[in-house]
Image 1 (cartoon, rainbow, N blue to C red):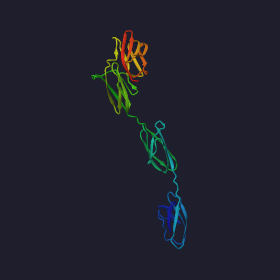
Image 2: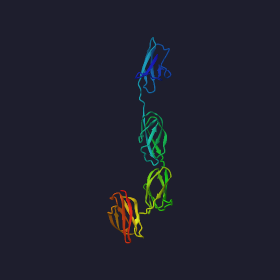
Image 3: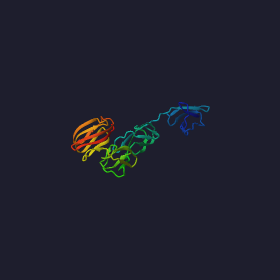
Length: 312
């Protein structure tokens, strides 16, 4: 008796085990020889298929018995990852690879998994990579992954402020990005990688603006030019006008009490006036057109005039 074992599509199945009247052949051996005439009961088993059984009657000739086996859909399971930091807070947008499958960022569920042991890796910005293995047997699995935060690299930005002769200038005020140091403090620490705008200001000098690209500890050289046109007026009046160039607001400080401030354009027209009665004054210049203006400050000792560039 020779068995032909095939699936429902008519394709042969290799490796099935056929048992005929209690005699079990090795997997894939479908031929039983030296059988006497009789009726024999058989069973056929194969991984992934429902068992098949039946009878074959041997009378006076060799027989071929075709057995069609029905495929069994294997049980599959779901693995769900819970990704959190060391404080137990959830981490969004991690990328998980389980076996040979990588989900999109933030997708922590893997479905239709056959029983097996799967290696996984988990990556997330700002955290050390995590890895491990999860074993799927006969139930859905939830795997918790705790990720360790990575402290970002930071750098030191040091400014060297000099005049046109190469002599150091003390007491300048430097703004780097959103940080403004005290006057004379030229070192910014714990700065993350990036490109930052900076501004360097010092009374008696034109301010300097620029950009600092920070990828490592960085030194920025700044040369300030003397502002020898900023103030004219009677001896004894010290006038400070900043920032220059100005945008939106302008600060005026005088060594003497200010009675009145006037802003005069290049045509000689007074475009702004205010009574002050103090040594400091802040004016809103957001309505002024871009250009050069003269700031005229009247005190009890006389009038001092400064010049400012407005860039609104």
